[in-house]
Length: 398
Image (cartoon, rainbow, N blue to C red; front, side):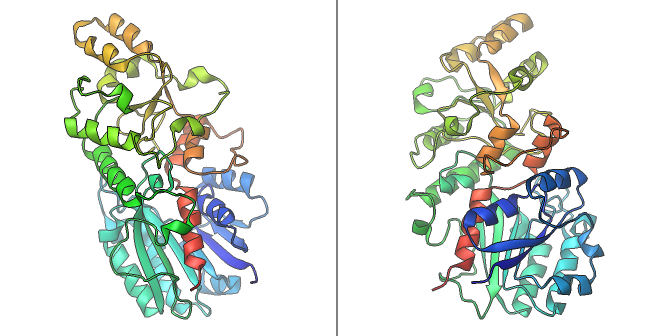
């Protein structure tokens, strides 16, 4: 087959582009569009041959889009109008304007794309924007399937629950039976890269983990060997929280975090939690060890804010966390700090988060992009492996 001509909207740092490459589908990104200047610097650094349009999508006239004659659209519209912890302005949010323009222009294209893949946050599935989207797709003659997926379904130890939609024109049937229900696992999971037979179970645990991150804050070590029945439960954690985390860490379908960690970190001291953060947030940290098979979703505030932005890594693996935390309430601040420091807790590095997101080893950042900016960009990105598998499914034939 001739290489697909792909239009990448809201291209960010290129997560969709990486997923397309990983899928192995013969394709060329003929244009990537994004207004974020920092993200564009990273995109150009990694994909110097791809035409990058630093403009608003709604500023691209129909005639210009028709001239591209693309076969596929990959897009990840702004999530702020739909996130559960935001204002949920939905279609009235100005940041939804560009997506509504895409829906308006889709039926008017001289040659509609054959394939569409969209990613967004959980919550999008119940939005007015989603209703407008499926109405438009049906009007244009697309079949589609909606999914809610998290990386542990592919054996990746990071919760990042996201909404996905894959669509293709009626003349191109799906290789599986579509349903109007939102799938919580990959169709034809046997053909994907994970041999895990408990996909739905993996997702169920991370659905709950995703909810917990937004609604309750807990602190616990992980792994059954560190969490016996007598383990101390921290102030903001329930026995149910502990049981769920134990279950995740016993799931051999999921790889250990140590596989995603850097061996030699440049300037390691910058990643250790500062004393003020240790004292203030000790009881609300989500602490994991290299042998854990779970971590919470990393957000754009990671490394700058502590609460609810992602897990931290306990690097002193020989220290029993329970013995450290049990005595904290009776100690002075100086003694607390001394105790907590024995755990040697640090943030995951941007490269480690990129690894968990599935970005290939050759993916990098220009030197001028700061650590804070890298965290922010990665927090706004997506999981490359999930996208790659969805593209493969989207293009499979009967």
